[in-house]
Picture 1 (tube, rainbow, N blue to C red):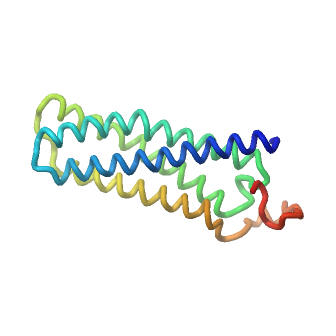
Picture 2: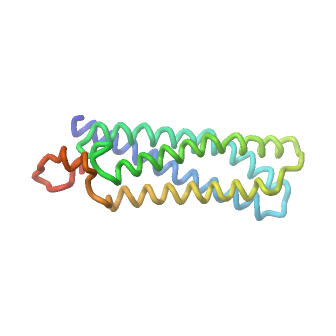
Picture 3: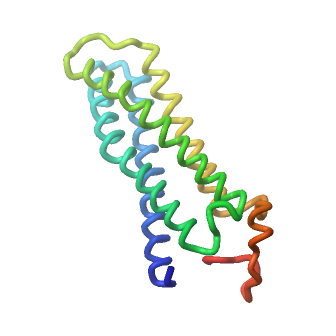
Amino acid sequence: MTPRLRKLTLTTHVAISVGWLGAVLAYLALAITAVASGSPELQRAAFVSMEVIGWYVIVSCAFGALLTGLVQSLGTPWGLFRHHWVLTKFVLTTLATIVLVKHMPLVSRMADHARSGTADPGHVRIQLLVHAAGGLAVLVAVTVLSIYKPWGRTAYGRRKQEPTDAGDQPGA
């Protein structure tokens, strides 16, 4: 990958990942509102908004981050299997995306309850809040891994290690 293309894919990956994190924060605020508000109108609005943000922003950003992260790892010296932190980020992002896609139908059911004015199961509100908080925790962990790059190289990475003039900073 050329340096210009590498910078473009990195910029795209960071922008999408930051968007995902921001959208999850907004979603968490709506989930807190849905649990804590005494206003049925505000609760209904929160559920409908959670569905829109979830499907159109969070799911899109999750797949975008997964795809751009994969392109970054395979197209740069970091590699997907050369560093523990890269592989861990990829596994966490993949798992978070799977959990998200499995979670979203529940959000849609709650939004359907809100639109029809029927009673919603109260325990589901807490589940939505827990999912949002858990998603945020995973995204913060992935961000920390991106910055601190802990644990060094994998066994595969040590075998494939190429000496560089800049030290152990490929793709930087």
